[in-house]
Image (cartoon, rainbow, N blue to C red; front, top):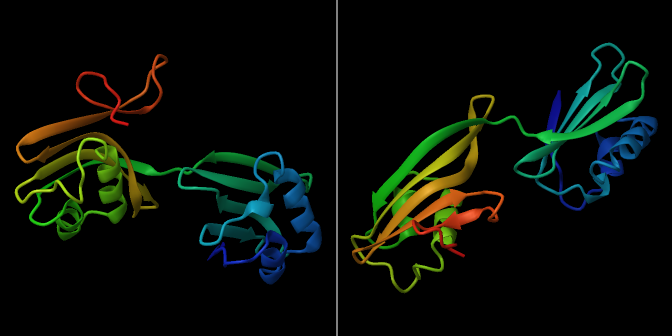
Length: 197
């Protein structure tokens, strides 16, 4: 398996050629994938994994991470035709908790406690309509969040969804909960069912 990150400014055909994929295989992959994901939209910095046959050296499988949630898989079937599908990235999801006290800013407090910067941004965005994190943050503010961490093959990849959180600002507690139902759109809501957005 050859794993690489898509370089900046490269189209799929050029990348395939550089990685030793035949024109025939490249065209087959493009054709089979077009209804699932247009590989002309391949994004720099995303992971691409290629599996080659150990004996012939021919490409057998391509896996491309479309975004943080889904991946495109294109495989050669026994009839030597290419088949494409999009499926969720098979993360191992762990529920974790983040908490702490603010001395200067939420951002600084969370980074000092070893939390992922992406979790900081998600928490700040969650409460953006309730708290102005630039002007209203006070020393002694506190936060607590229950969220998912995503792991792949045992390695931490990124934080996922925040399930529930509390931010206490100048003595006032704000709560947010992830909620989805047939009657409401997916999003964050307070204890009374009002959207936080």
